[in-house]
Image (cartoon, rainbow, N blue to C red; front, side, top):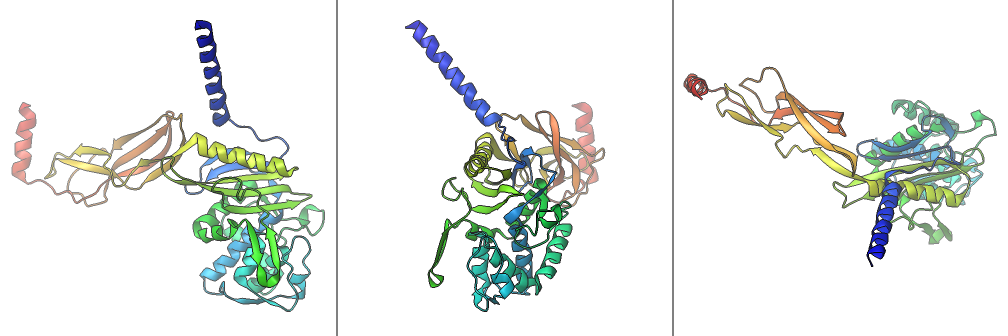
Length: 386
């Protein structure tokens, strides 16, 4: 019986160690061109592989098309309720399509669904012509927007991602790290995109149209609600996915990117591995909280004596569940009253596993009045004889 108990204990230890390794370390780098897992709010990258090389991006391009279009909507230049006249050029766009017909009019809001849910190249062209008047002008707008956002690896030749030819100049390109920055920007600026990209299929009865979403994680990964797929021979199978995580400290949202996979099942499994890693190994911690005082400092010439010190901003960070986190406060050499609400009196340093990862100003949250002469004399003698 004792031998059985020892064997059972050994098995449990092995299982625990195996699970720890599964969630503590992953490696999905084989047979792909690049990968990244990151947080939307903080911009922290939790996993990366070959993220700085410029790669062909196929229909992931349509995220930039969406962004340029939504900027025009937010500026009042166009409306999602616009009736868009479909040109012969847009209707003839090759590749995946929504079945647009030359001469018909379609609501811009429906073209967005056709572009993002079923990856309609014809919808992307129609949107480009509506926003930019011509496709070429819209492509110029796409490249300008990339420059504005600091996406230095970006290069666009069309609004949909279908190659013009097999040459490098005939492809839309961007690095994985810049695709991540683009996706983050869209989710922060226009989170309503998720109301479209979460759809498992696009059904339009008046067009007799019904087609499943190209995104393979919708309905497969719990909570997944975006974002965009892509495929060409040059780019391989690509997927930018996103999922919210709740009940794990502070809520957060993950972005996972797989570029250049060669097998559909492999692209899906690698995406699931990334997202599971982000959900199971990390927690979002609010390491400084503006509603909670961080320390009390004694200001000898103040009316109140001890003064509560607060962080100037909330500082959130995704930390591994095994990380050791601490904060420390360094005060200015001279902290004297009077002080106004919001005045800086020091610096809060945040450490993870002994390494400083961030700093936040330490401030007073109320006006701090100077003590009168009698209070200061009294404190002098108290301190002298204490």
